[in-house]
Length: 421
Image (cartoon, rainbow, N blue to C red; front, side, top):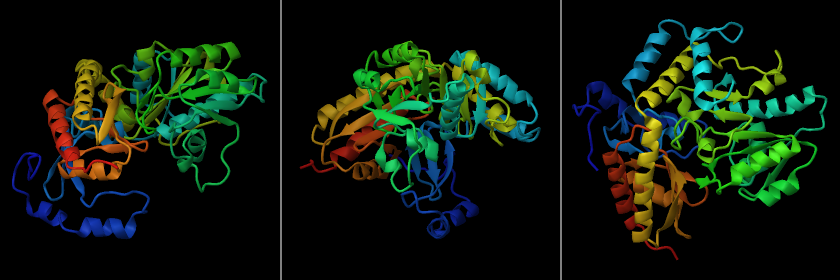
């Protein structure tokens, strides 16, 4: 890949040169909590699907901040919106209405098909709100014993203690003490297991249309529809975690729309703000009274600045037909990854996913961290999902040429890895 000195190709300024010293990395080593494993460079600026570090090196962004930067980096409309709104009003708390949030609620409900919205700051918070909504809904109906949630092995719902309890991967729960009671995990895609786990104490079934963090695992055909039927049969709620699959990522506003399934509530975040922190819980009208005043809240949730940013993201996705683009570019990416797997069978064994949420499955014995590093050395940024998958979640604005460039560099990088075994 080419190396650029700056987003516009200019020679770095004195300030840029100063920032490219080792000082930022030293600060990271000294002052940041060591709960991440970042590579030894510092990202400084971005443009579209490109990122640049403090040394001026260009990277092709195929992960979008884990499916967050839906419009890429420094999108002119989003930049202008944030600047303008920051000069007008940023935050007043939910003790008062703000105009941008009211408009966002109306627009988000129109696009997702839900009736009401609650705003927070992240996907974990949206899932926490959805858990509380489900339990309080039945409590208010005089069914306090109906609080159990059916969730799935290999799932991921966030990092707070409540969200971790819902997460069906033990490594995320290890070392944090007893988990929240009332959660039953069953195998993803196993309708019979769900049916066997149902009972009069079940408040809801919580499911991701595609398990992103778990390894980019799409739900089997008909699985979501069966969950809808089982929830209705037992009087429970179907709760959708659309944090990673929503807001155009899979080619529709919600990933569940691909299956023609409607949930009772859904958690959203990531791509909704295009990089500005925002989360949302959307729900049906009949659940509106489940969380009465004082039962739940969020200090920063739905602030005017986040709401204005999200409104711009929704508008750009619709006006530029980025849902349709995610379908088309996703098909291109999927075909390209499948071709790589065919040509390099000793390194990767296939691909899976929907829209622009795709995974390249590595062969047994191939270390995903090694593969990730080789790809990064060639200037393409990805993430690892599950135990053996390279995850691709590029911005929704990604071009045909950029996907082709990424595919070529990924294949060249993986071809350098010795065969496993």
